[in-house]
Length: 506
Image (cartoon, rainbow, N blue to C red):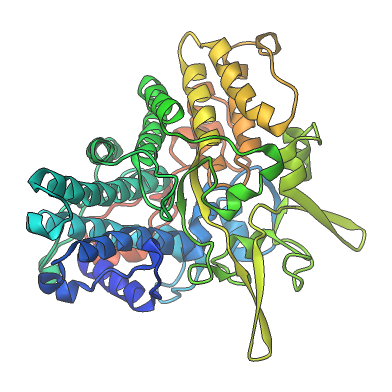
């Protein structure tokens, strides 16, 4: 990773970000004015907002939250776009010219967008620690320091989030935790062992959970900025990825017992995707006109998964749901998640089912052209996810807590209005783990989770549920993405992801 490349990317994003009163839409101040801009708490607030904004930019590059997390899975029967079909088929080693910056394969093989957010976090941490106490609100030094620490906690949460996300995608990644003033003097960074990267993220989150409060239900920024519940949820996911399930369970307990979140009523299931519902824990804000993206843009999940009537110009969804998997997951078609989350469109003699979670589409007319804006937040973490992650932690134990697993599964199933499971329905530990994975597949369909759920399932059971990874390939690490060779031009110390070393060299 060249810090120069990252900073150029960061400045490009900042020039393109519209300003708005929403927290996430405040632009971070350019690095050029760092020495003069860190004067007031408003400055600190705007700079921390930039960390979240850059996460959003990373996820909107190639629709990556969903492309990484859902596309290479059993959810789909076919993908219309040829480039994205190669992602679905896990043909990730196809060469792309470094000048073809719009190619989705290139976008998905570079981690630069995430490092732009990391660098913004590092910048915030550096300058926040150098602002005088009087810059922050408070009646005394302790209160002022607590305000400072709250902003530091958010910056460190965002850094931890980026590193966890990259570790799931690429495994070992460069680890950069220092603010770099002299960008031109930075040399290349090598990849660091994933364990070290995740330990750094855990350290950041242990700081964050100390200084962040649980959610403020009255706050307009609730869910779209980190709080204590988001920190514990991210910790839970990191521990699950590491296989440290005792720690995962304890983090889940903290969220469930103390977070103040509640499952929305099954009849209001769609409200989850409109944003800031009662069960939302952490989301990326995109549900206002100033934040939304065009539903006919490749950055929008609506572009790939919706069809008429939501987008009248689209006759068939580009990502075509695998009807066999859909029927397997939702054998009970009264399931409120199925009723409220899916529909179909007929095209000739064919019927195409599609997921309508992200269908808050608003038509806007301008210059005699109708545009369709998608106004759905990206649901990163929510309470149902935490219940099911806790169920996984209980199932993963050498002596599983069958009753505890079933209780957590039934909490989610009851909201969906379907039959409760019984311990007697489960024949052994592997079946118990598979039951959790299946429930996560139902509940979190198209929420950026399925791919990582299948990875954890195979680590626990030794059985592959991927369409295009054999178990032998899994053991060699095929599920980690390659890095694009263009990164190696600017980073002489960078090495290719082990599985892909002989497959993608230029």
